[in-house]
Length: 299
View (cartoon, rainbow, N blue to C red):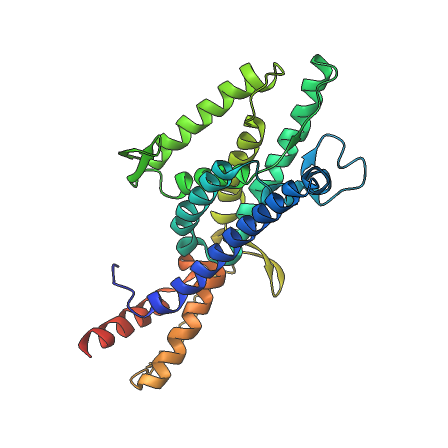
């Protein structure tokens, strides 16, 4: 079923954009705050409290596995991450809904922190005296790339190679390329105690987080944070089989002919898409959206 979504473009799409804009706005706002602290000579203090380091958890800074993702090293760093967050986030939000999008993003951020944290001890063991810290949203963006490649592996997209040359590539190919670069950088730069400023281990952890979210939660219809806590769709073989006793046939007809009633029903469906994604709709709800689109086209 393909339709133009004339009604949804003014409701659901705007709410999805607001989620992205808020997330991007927080990142940019924190970077501006870093720049102000840099001028006053207090940037190191800010990053010592909110960036991820090998001793941050041991010193009781339990928030750093999340807050590091809002800090960035320089203008190019925050610009590239925010571009990736915007385009990848916009690509998956309609399918996932805002709740699941935020769950997947911060799951990738968290696993990126875990991967870098473990890597920092390996580096310190083989290179005594080397310490460091991590910041940036790259792990979350890497997770969104892995998630999008898992959801739409063969949908061609256009990317700017070196931010100049436009090329068309399948998401699964792009994800494998990024994975290969991260593995190479992790093995031959990061683990060797190299001076490179890229946290390849965090990228790998973020991609693992996005892939695991797709396999273990999104594709199995598991949802966290709903009204009932955890909701799991029962497999068909566990569902009670209907009785073979013949039931009387009742004919029901839903009257949605009144524009006001149809608008209320469409609003309810859009709220459901916003929280659970388009894939959660029933066939009847999709038919209602089709009918709403047809009515709007005839006006």
